[in-house]
Image (cartoon, rainbow, N blue to C red; front, side, top):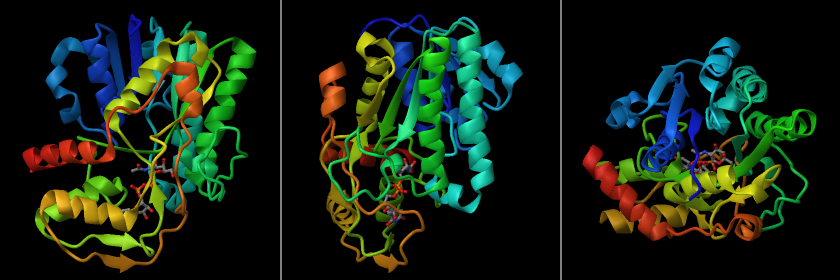
Length: 314
Ligand code: UD2
């Protein structure tokens, strides 16, 4: 892996951000974390002690951004209101954080000589386009405020490249899972919720008929995609899917988690969730070709590792 001298990770106390921080530190990179701890946790980065600089603050704070961005070579922009449901309930708030916050991060980056910004985008931008798998050249069909905001972020990234020469890479994450994904809110990732239910011997609620598909990508692979996006010359100005190219339906996911957890409990079915996408599976040909990325951790192995973490954390 090519070396990065100094990186800012926004949302670095969150699930994805904190794993990225771990890997950057392991690679000898100087790391600053900016996180307002709205959904991130100090305990995700506490083990790093003074090997990182932690700044508690908000990405909408332009003055603070100027201070923390200065001297950074790469910015990994992971901070966001990450829940589709929350964006449906409070579109103004998620717009402020996800759009205004993103513009502020890009603006501070270009004013302070950052070489490249790697941005967390989302598979949500594809919406319910029935064509599968989803390829980056499909016309986006955002169905939720969250999806609109992530797509807007991509457009800003592209405009900042054209206007100011700032290198940007947008990564459309599919469903990321792994240790540290917080199961405690109704907006949490389905795997962390299902595992917690299985451990407690309780039935999960499946929204809709459970036939919806998702492409679950393990956190370690997502971190690797970020590092490639930051260091490979060919990534600049591009948008890439980050997934596995495979999918599982939500009801089959519960069966698999039950099997790995040694429980057999029938799920409860509830009404479908507003803004939920029916089918989601990535085409990862582009990121494979341009950056040499391919996922290394299969769903089953990732679930086993996540389950071990859930049990240790209980
Ligand atoms: C994920 C991302 C989101 C966005 C989106 C793009 C997470 C946590 N969120 O949202 O940020 O990028 O992908 O489409 O990764 N479900 C249940 N029962 C539960 C919880 C969830 O049936 O208790 C279903 C839910 O209705 C959905 C699927 O499981 O169909 C996945 O839900 P999720 O919240 O983990 O992720 P998603 O795809 O809504």
